[in-house]
Length: 362
View 1 (tube, rainbow, N blue to C red):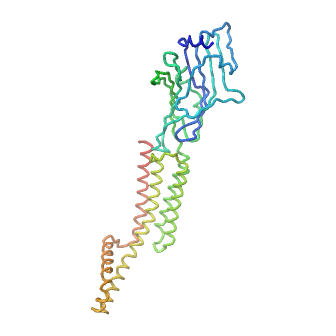
View 2: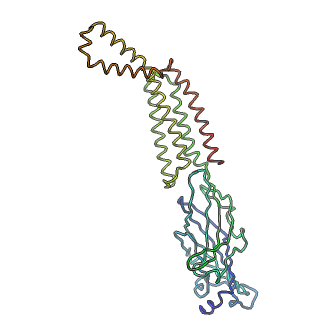
View 3: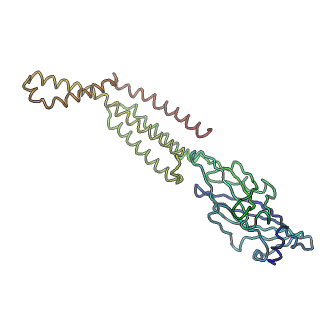
């Protein structure tokens, strides 16, 4: 049997079609698919008289010649064997052989995550002959793009299949040229989950940090509490979001950029109060220093001045520092909150417009 089959390899026509595919994504750099793989070829030596096809037990596959098809970039694959090995062998009177398998495989897929979670990924499933080169067998899709079925009803947790098509090519190695079939499919990530889980809470935290602009500057505990609480909450949100992100440290992802923007605005709101509060205290401190120095000078005179000669230098340095700060002094420090009420939301909206336009349309 083996010798007779090997002698007639050049007479075989080899068709392959994927009639059903279920893709389940577990990791961010590969995918797991359950495939019903149906391979069809013609062997004239298996012709017989009759009008009906002959279905054989799957265990008889070892007595027939079958193509040595393998899945390129497969990390792990197995053939389902409950309750028996999921094989189908059917021979037609003209010598056509139908060989069907049900396998589950994990295939590598290189993904560009710079726009995560607004990214689109193009993955492939490549089927190739292991030992027979292009002079021995020929691969082609039976029905072209229609050879792959089941994607119209496919439902994935994070992705939507936007497009898919098939192609035929050859793999070139040092040992020769081998036939190869490629199935391409484009996936678009569903962003609604990430909007509800990450983007909306981040925006709400930023808006919450702006509440401090409407609280009196004299209410130090209230404003400090809001600022510190929002900063710590945003930090916790960033750490929680990162645990669900792919381990791709080489990528600066879109969601990382947005979380960084939100954290900057929240931290900026806390710094705004620090600056506003300092501006209310700086003039009073400068006046106190000047009044204390002038009173000491008038009372003690030259004796007191010579006695504290070593302390005059630090006092003069502090006065100069307050003079420098006075150059940036706002006449009414309470107007800083009024400016912040307008500038913070406006700048946040502008940055959001640029962010979403860039990552969604560019």
